[in-house]
Amino acid sequence: MKTEQMLKKMGEISPEFIEEAEPKRRRPLLSYAAAAAAVLLVLFGVTAALKRYVLPGTDGMQGGSQMPGAEDIMEHSDGSLGPTNGEAPTAGETFTPSDALPGSDGAPDLIAEAAERSDTVLLAICTGREGLAVSMEPEKLIKGGLEGGVFTIRLDPDCGEDPDEPHIGGEYLVFLGEAGEDGVYEPEAVICREGAGVRILGAFADEGTSFETIIDLIERTE
Amino acid sequence: MNDPDIIRLYLERSEAAVSETKTKYGSYLRTIALRILSDFRDAEEAESDAYLKAWNTIPPEEPKSLKAYVGRLCRNSAIDIYRRASREKRGGGAYEEAFCELDALTSGADVAEAAVNGVAFSEAVNAFLRALPERKRRMFVQRYWYFMTAAEIAKDNYTTKAAVDMQLSRLRASFGEYLKREGLYYENRADA
Image (cartoon, rainbow over all chains, first blue to last red; front, side):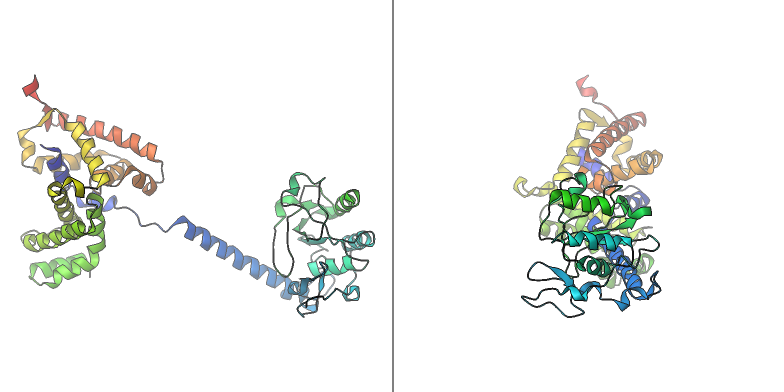
């Protein structure tokens, strides 16, 4: 039998095998990735909304709804940072420290202390630790930090590999993470987020890094 | 429309049978033909041939699976077109590869008389396939029925091209052994 005849005869195999072997029409993996990303974004958004508008704060206040929203944190044209009370910053506008609220626990106080000695701003967001969930909302931290001035710490995205070499500059870094006992950050809980007028350059999340260490790093770098 | 309804249209000699077949399986048939023929017009010709042959053969045929039936008609038409096409027009890489693979398997061999009528051969191939694990069977059919490339088979079966090449090589060897064992072909005695 010629090969071609053999191939043609093989065309007569049982239909069940033909249907079984029919190439699948798969959706591209990218679509699944996009769908997964969309689900994560929705979950993130819902969580953020709950935190801000629904969940009570530990100080008895109702979420973030009674304080300036994250969208109020704007980068100003002079490189400073601060809330705008719902108003968009305009060119040349500078932040007024009188807008600041005092920190309600030790961590913002530490930032405030550091701020007195620095002209930079450290933004930090901690969630998950009882007692810090509300008080460490970014706007409060900023305001806590802004009480005594403004200080900014800039860390490169890979700074977690070498926390001894932070870069101080005019950019902003946001710590998003879950603080364990004593305000120690858990690296696996760190998430980066951009938007709301905050430019995130990286996350500083080495295990065991505390506010004190961060401030110490700032001072040593200075 | 489901297959039994379309087949009923054929049996009633309603011309809607062809249009319904085309609506349901047109793209499936074109895909099969394009694996063999590189030219879209040739593929369309193979597809049209399949509709015509289906119209001419149902009845008396009454296929259990219309999809497999018209698929086979289209596949064989495409092979015929491929054969008569000029070499310049050839471009069905996967078909050419599959052809060469089986050609190497049967080179220097003759086919037993029983195989010539085709029925024994088809039944033997079915028995061979039935004895295979599903994954291997899929790969074999995808290669020699659908004429998919090794890369396409690998993607469809979540494996690597190298693994598919190796698997197909083993399957061809065992297929050749099987055909010999069943007496469907033997070494060419003319050379002996």
